[in-house]
Image 1 (spheres, rainbow, N blue to C red):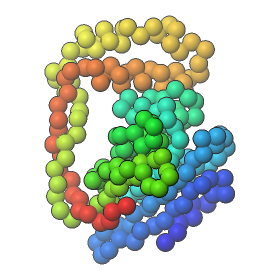
Image 2: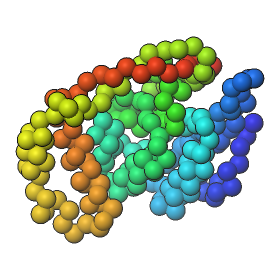
Image 3: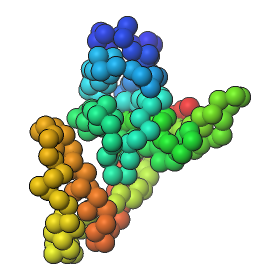
Length: 219
């Protein structure tokens, strides 16, 4: 069933639908989006309002070509202002991005985002279709039915080397890094360096978590 979010839909190339759940299972909101490379700030903000409205649902899957090739999803950093604003939207709405491999010419342009861990699984790139230079993305939307075991990397601060951590952060020229930037850009710079230091820190462990999941549909 098509869903109208009522937030400047004419400005964006997006489609939202509600997938009705079976008895005992909740509905899923699914969105498909194409963001042109030259899209302006006004259309971007309209899209972010739609994402914000849709993310209030218990289960959201958003997919599409967002054209942010400069985003590093491992470090959650980006070079361009519009890409950093997109990352801010993703963080503000507690979304997870599940595509890990490049989908076009070495860049991760095509994304799958969800607001519920374990809702999307079996993600595969299947090669290009016809004359397209984008990889096809195949994945499953999962429903709560059977138990599964997942591994999530987390920092173990009980074994942390805080001296090393301070040394890694101390290498950043903090007097120059945020120079001439506003509060938001300065925060993103700080967060980027903090996440990079965490990635370089050796004391991580895999934490096993049980969650409910079962196959609903392949897309």
